[in-house]
Length: 372
Image (cartoon, rainbow, N blue to C red; front, side, top):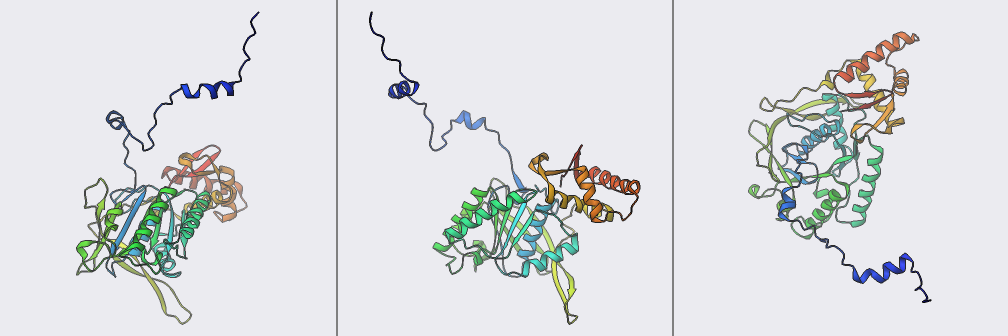
C-alpha cells in the first residue's frame, strides 16, 4: 500500500500556494473609472452655506478697522448654537477659538455678544487664550491632541477652528516666504486630522487687488476667502470672494453697535461692540431668544444635566439624559421654589412642552436631548 503524503496545515498550504495566486489590483492613489465617478453620491456639506464648507481652510481678511474679530466671533457663536446666521443656513458644530492676539480682547467681546443675544450657556464653544505656534510641529501635534480630547467632552464634536490671527500664530516668521508656506501646511494638517473647517483671521496687503497679505501662494491654498470692506458710511460688507465650486458673491452687510458691559472701580465704562445686520441683511428671528424666563431656566438645567450625566445615544451622535435627571436638575436649579410637587411638575411639564414644540429639545421616553 502506497504511503499517503503528509497532511499540510492550512498555514503550510497558504504559504506554498501564495506564488500561484494573483492578488486583485488595488490602486494606491484612489484611481477610478469614468463610470465609477458618475455613480458617486455627491453631497454639498456646508458649515455656513455660501461662506464656509464643512471642512477645509478659509481666510477672513480686510484692512484694520473692518471688525474682523467681531465678525468671526459672531459667526462662530452662531455655529456653536446652530442658529441661522444673517439668513444663511448653519450646521451646528463645536467651536475651538484660538485668541492669539491676547487674553482679554475676545472675552470682552464675548460678553458684549452675550448681552446683545443672550448668554450662550452650555454652547459647545471653547476659547483658547494661548497661541498655537503653527511653525512648530510639536506645538501643532499637541494642539491636535487637545482638540481631539476636548471633542470627547463637548456635546457636539468640533467642526470649526479659528486662529485669530494668522500672523500671531506664526511668531517671528516672514509672511512672504517659507514661514507662511509652513503655516498653511500646518493648518491643512489640522483640518484633515480633526475633520474641521479652519478659519484664520488675516490682513489685506498693500495691494488690495491681490487679496490677503503675504505669500502669493496663500490664495491658491485656501478653500474660501471672505473679504471685509468698510465704506464711507461706516457700513462693513463681508463678501465670499472665493468658495470652491461656488460662484463668488455671497455677502452680508453690517455695522458695529457699541455696548457698555459694566463699570470699573472708578465708575468708568467698560465697553465693546457687536455686529448688527443692516436692512439689506435680514436676520432670521430665533425662537430661543424669545423664551420666557422659566423656559430659559429649564433649558439651562438640561444643558447642565447633559454635561454632568449625559450618555451617548441621542440622534445625530449627541448626548442625552433621562427625563427624571432633568427634572431633578430643574429642582436644584430654581425652576420653581415650592414644596408642592404637583405645582412644580405642572411648571416643569409646561416648559418641556414649550421647548419640544419649538424643536429645541427632543423627547423619547425616558430620554431627552438638545436638538439645537
